[in-house]
Length: 96
Image 1 (cartoon, helix red, strand yellow):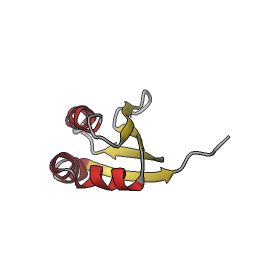
Image 2 (tube, one colour):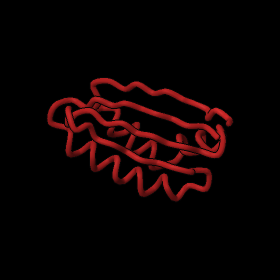
Image 3 (tube, helix red, strand yellow):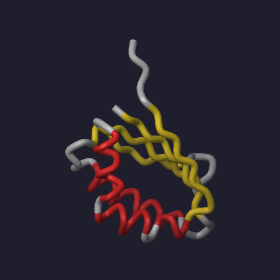
């Protein structure tokens, strides 16, 4: 399994649009065969800060997610243009 955590800070005025994009991405991604978990969060202290937590069966499943048409359209085509910063981290779970 592979886990991804991404913190996004969107530019002022893009909060509502970013929230809509995360909602659309959640609906699509949760239907992917290799997706185990996908949840977007919004900071209670800073409404421009979002955190995305994802789990996939494998690197191949994560790669397939990143190549999906809706990822290209919503994330690369829209979300990336409205972010101030993006901090992705990839993890593998510890056994035990």
